[in-house]
Structures are given as structure tokens and as C-alpha cells.
View 1 (cartoon, rainbow, N blue to C red):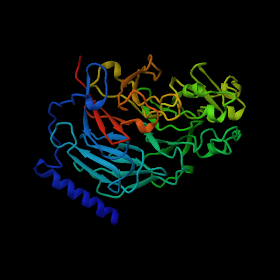
View 2: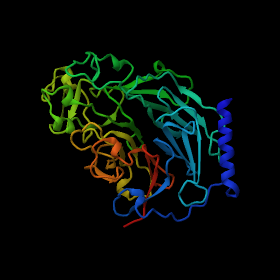
View 3: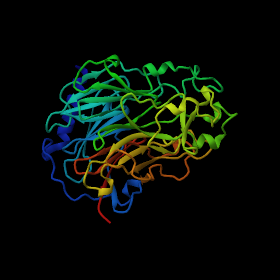
Amino acid sequence: MKSNRKIVAQWLLVLLLAGCNGINSRPVQQSLACDPDNGGITLPEGFCALVVADNVGRARHIVVRDNGDIYVALMRLQNGHGIAALRDTSGDGRADLIAYFGDVPGTGIDIRDGYLYFAPDTALLRYRLVEGELLPQEPPELVAGGLPERGQHAAKTFAFDEAGYVYINIGAPSNACQSRDRQRGVPGMDPCPLLERYGGIWRFRADVLGQRQDDGLRYATGIRNAVAIAWNPFADALYVVQHGRDQLDTLWPEYFDAEDNANLPAEEFFRVDEGDDFGWPYCYYDPIQNKKVLAPEYGGDGQTVGRCDQFEDPIVAYPAHWAPNDLIFYDGTQFPERYRGGAFIAFHGSWNRAPLPQAGYNVVFQPMNADGTPAGDWEVFADGFAGTDQIRSTGDAKHRPMGLAVGPDGSLYISDSVRGRIWRVIYRGS
């Protein structure tokens, strides 16, 4: 009852702010004016950006409804709520109505078959969306609950396929499955018991309520943490970008120095098919040698391959510690044809390259073929989020790109986890 009163109060505020604009009417889209500085970011020629909203809360993933409404998952409660809802009533591309709902924070968020799906750290919920209404009018339903979380890598993200299934990332609460996590010289547990409940992708029915982890299928394993997860409708397959392991030099200084740690291991882009095993925690991908090698926790020395030849390789290897936190496949038509079917990846930025400068803090475009294979080298699409060229720690970054979404007109939306800024990227032509 208390939650419902909060929703009603927020909704009354929205109605008051809306006035004669008509909250239930979709605004007529006018020519959008980009910000002179693109909201502080740099983009390729022909593109520009405007800031849709600022300071909405520590944003995680983001989704845009068919009518242009925006829903943002929040890392921490804002105004006592875990989801921000944004609406533009004037047609200038900027959110003039911002309301909040939901009692818990989370990361994953998406829309499917008239429902807003949202993932706090232990569950997948869904809210029924009502035509014309910005805020849900009913409490959420539990799609899957009791999902495990033990501190690190607890965020749940998900993706839908075309057959009625939802795929949920359950990250491993560990760096490399040591019996004492992140301790110098401690060997890894073998076999790693965490893989029974963590470190993989679980598949559930998207339209069935009250599921538990045992009701799902462990679709793939050996994935340390895949905050970036998406279904590729062009290839009809699931893809993720994995967060690679940390601290090679501090945990195993006899084999690795600070420069090795800054460049190893790669952040791995996987095509994920049922039954795949990608080798965490036993192996990591070395982008310099272009192969998976045995982790030092399991007897590796930076060169030995050992059991690692039995695991799946990435389709692309990205720089170490860039922290891939969202992935989408561009299905709009606004951008030039070369972008259609390609992947955008939001890199949140590193913390683990010290004493070398940190890196990442950008959005990358990865060209893709229709069959789901890479179609050439990746390129930085959006940059400048950090606001400085020298980043010694994550606290130096003004903004960190976190979530991605494609709007109904083909615009690309980017969310920021530091100050809660939302950008809308538009193609104007060269």
C-alpha cells in the first residue's frame, strides 16, 4: 500500500507539471537542435547529440518506448525509487517530465509485449505498461526470483530472443575462483564450485511467473560476468561481452608486471550458443598472443595453454579492463547503412590499469556481417565522456557511459552512471 501511495504521489506531480500539454498525447516531433558541444562528447562526422536529461540518478541500462518515453534503471535509489521515467511533451527531444517508481535499484531494463522488464540484483520483474501512461499503474510481477548474488558482479542483465525466452547473466562473485578471493599466490578451486550457480547465462520463459533458478536452463557457462548482453536479431543468436579478470601483477608478480596487467586479459566478445563453455576461471584470452592461456591460479605462467584449447574463443578481443557494460545491435534506419546490424558497446572504463593511466570510457562500434561474424575492425564511435585525457582513477571521470538504447526514430541513446546524464545521438548527414 505504501508503494502504491508513492506511485500515486509521483503521478500527481507529473500531471501537475504536464498542464495543458496533455500527458497522454504523443508530441509532434519537431526538428531537433543538438547541443553546440554535443553535451560534452565527440562523435564521427555527420553525427551530433543533445542532452535529453541530466542528474536523473546513477543510471544503469536504458530503454526507449515506441512513443519515445524513456525508462532508466538506477544503481541507487533516487527520490526513494529505483527506476526513472522520462517524457518529452514539447517535441524538442528533451525530457520535461521526470518521475520515479519502483522500490529497489537494479541494472537490466527492457520492454517486451507490453511489459517493462526490470532486474534488481536477485530477480527479474515486469510492470504492465498502459497505453499513454508514463508510469505503471500496478505493482510489478515476479518473473524469476531468488537469483543468487554475493557482492561483486551481482548486477543482473538480460536479453530476449524471438521465441519467448529471456537470458539472464549471473556473474561470478569472484576474480578467479580462488579459495580466498584476490589473495596473492592462492590457487584456484578445481573444479570451480561457483559455476554451479554463477558465471554463466541462464535461460527462462519470459511469460511465466514465479520461476526460480532451477526452473531455468544453464544455457552457457565459463563467463565471469557479462553485464553487456543482447540478442542479435540479424543472426538470431545471443551475444555478450565479458568482463575479464583483474590483478595479474599483484596476485602473481613472479609472472606479470604492471604493464602486463594493463594489457591483459582482453575483454571478450562472444557469440553464445546453448552448451558453450568459455573457460572462466581456468583460462583468459591474451590479445598479444591471440590465444587463450591457462590462468596462474590453475598452474599457468602467461604462456601455457593447457586445457584452454577446449574452450570457445572470442569473436573479437577488446582492450583489457575497459569494462563492457552494455551491448546493442543497431536495427534503426536513421544512421548510414553501414551501421545497420552492427554492434554498439558501452565501455564503462577501467580501474585496474594503475599505475598506468586508466582507459575506455567510450562507446565503440563493431561492424558485423549478416551471419553474426565481425565485418572488420572496431572503432571508437563516441568519446570524451570522462572530460579529461589523463584518468588515474574512476573518480576522475566526469561521466562514464553505461547503457545504450535505440529509439523509435533510430536515434542512439546513451546513459551515464556518474551524474545520470542521458544523451541522444542523431545523424544529420555529412
